[in-house]
View 1 (cartoon, rainbow, N blue to C red):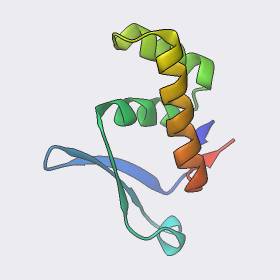
View 2 (view 1 turned 90 degrees about the vertical axis):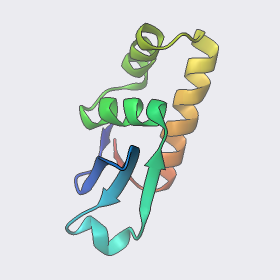
View 3 (view 1 turned 120 degrees about the vertical axis):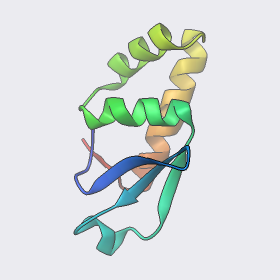
Length: 88
């Protein structure tokens, strides 16, 4: 999985914000605000990371159990897939 081109995450006033640029901005109006974990997962998806690698990275970075990490990753991926922001 990878974030579609035309979507950028930037830090603005201490907040992680996703915006659409170029052609993507024609179809996506507004912005998405991400918490620190969401920003972490977004960066992994920018690199084309799969869910197994995302899980390993979450377990290495955050103090959480595998079940919680899997659930959180699935919720995040489903949300951004639903918004049409992922190429598979």
